[in-house]
Length: 422
Image (cartoon, rainbow, N blue to C red):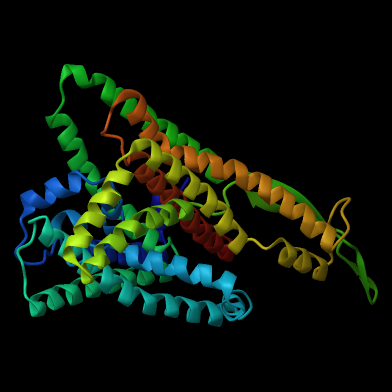
């Protein structure tokens, strides 16, 4: 557990927390600055009829509900990150940049992701505005007015990306994840208020199911996120001069879910991609864009198709992200260089093969669990007809995972400072 009094006693850590809190407040202020001429009533009706835009609202931290200048949230940046990660599997130069050039290569890779975010945000903003015009949420605007709004929306997205990077620099949590986290948490009071206002005796089952799902998700996520398999590592003894080194034993921790909450975020981004294509198709034809949007909405409003697709994407992205971040061959080489080996396994290719088998089995368990938790609200709605939990599982999954990761980073800084003091 984190000792909050201990955090407040450490000036450096206390200042970092205050900086992060201030940046999140700036994000919340940015999310309530609307673009002009918005019909709020029509906007709420439109958003409530499309669950895909409910997911986009998660990324925007509720800014989409106000149609603010930050209404796209960090979704374009996440999309650009996915594209760049895919490019590492296609182009060797990108793979070398990301894996072999160290911190300099990662910085360059992230810079290219930010560059790609700008056109993606512009295209998505333009398409979304045209969709809202066709739905009567926004009035018909001339070219200059549309261009101004697109620039404002793109700037809002890039400001959020900048805020996220400033938060990450404090090393007490991932900035982009914390922005999404704060947006979800900020919506909880309004959700509780609506539940209390709409309460009736015949809705008791709804609230019981909601509480049960929340408890299951929270307990399950904590269990899976903290679960790991420890691979025993032994180090060979080495004689240097008159002294003997090595001979120690340790372990290699392999987490059940190496990818964390990233597969959920990636899966939501892919689910939003057809809607994104439908939005930018308004550049070609407004009538075609409207029909395309209706087709996409009809397809994804089918709970069965949506649940199967969402589950499959979560499983696929769990494997994909684990493969990107965990390289058994590289770990095997590092162990061999340091004189380490897995007991009973030959160093080199045999070690890499064993690690690959273990991580594949662990990832299967983690992927199936993440996929099940992600679609659990949809299963609840299919079985009971309760619609209040449509995105509750995903939101809780992100909140709990981000909270656990942030707690770990704060704890690591506390341990480091205690060690330095000792």
